[in-house]
Image (cartoon, rainbow, N blue to C red; front, side, top):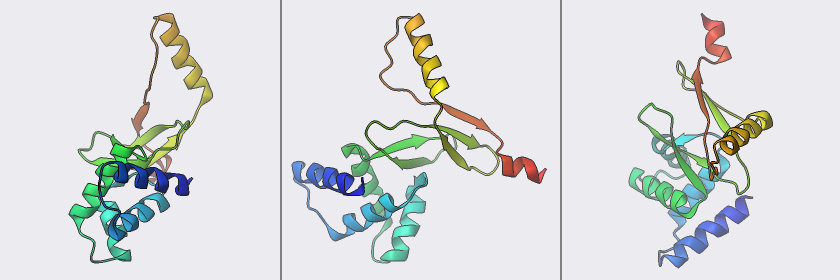
Length: 145
């Protein structure tokens, strides 16, 4: 998967007439190695631990390029911060977001998907894409109170 995403990115930047740089490749490697929903700041801190010479602006611009080429998705969970997650062709998941600690849990549920399709069909609506975000309090935060 990572190899395909790297190729997709390199093909994209070549098609745009942009240079393939070592710094972009480092940012890409760190992004692809992460399993979380990263803000620009979080990715910057991870990248900086590997290579302190890479600046915030480089990470920011790289993330925008990742999203433009389709290997990353920019998501907003209502806290004013953009986060980025991997995009894998044919894969779909939804999110539960803790309003106390900010934890983000991905989940898949075939029953929900079927129900959404049935509701759309009932109204003669063709779904091209969708997202489901549930906001509440995670198990760990509920245990603390």
